[in-house]
Image 1: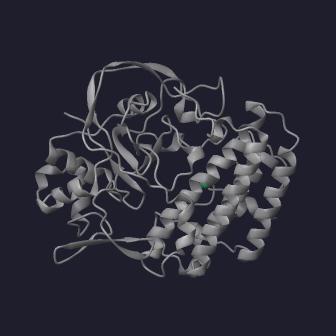
Image 2: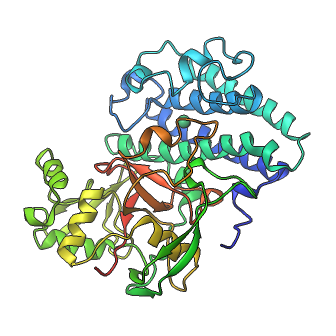
Image 3: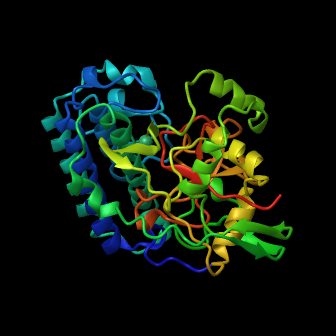
Length: 404
Ligand SMILES: [Fe+2]
């Protein structure tokens, strides 16, 4: 596998310092966008399982960095960090492992200004410390972890914006610019991939590795043919026009059960006016862009499209094999891609110090691969394993297909 030198995984102290500042700047800008629509007040945030109150999420991001970097935590469990949070009740408020999701709406949090001050203070102290650190993977582990965590929450803020702003005022256009690099959708057609073996996942020999990527192992893959690019909005629209949502036989049992709970004849956000289809992007109405990958579809919709088209989803191994081999024409990175694989541990898995990152979710989430337009470049990796429950259609996810 070629090493992406821009990846946070190999960043030294100087690059990390710049990236941590960039990530915090962006987190605060996203928070301000949500605050501008009144969502800094938790009472105004709908109690949805798919979002966090933005003020809680802002404090949580800083608290996480403080816990692992400044307080030297060896574990995410209570008591595993030294000293106290700079916020007297930081541990009571911002530990995602101990504060249940539903409770995040009713915490007696400090006002936004005080949470921002905490964010600045934590980052200042982290940068002071980082300036004296050696360029050593073990030493830099907590810094890289804190950065990746903040970047993931940055994307979560983006889908919170999409979820909430669809109901209210549009997001400022400039906010979306840094990551509005969707680019071309990639060419249609498929790539024939010869079977073979490849080194899946990663180990700790160099750079940062997520626990769910270990242990690295040589994995065999049979020959397969895979789409060169994610399924386009145009190809998905054909399924919609062909009555895909009304024909039960295209849907799995779980997919039918989900569909029964919805009034859905097209993906989330799509609306039809006469012959014209529209969607909503961060609060702004937009015509469907037929050339770009379909997004905001869940696993059930991806599976139903495949059944209709006589295709199937790739397994995680097939996807990683194709992406890691840098096959000519294999385009990814505009949308996360649902795979056929349930999110499961690799052989030899052991939870790393952020214990709740992967282990609690094995078996109940589906693996997605790739990256979305909202994923910072430094986080992108052919071996990155994302995972969500199958019904999630608020995330920036699409899919690609394989020949059966
Ligand atoms: Fe988190």
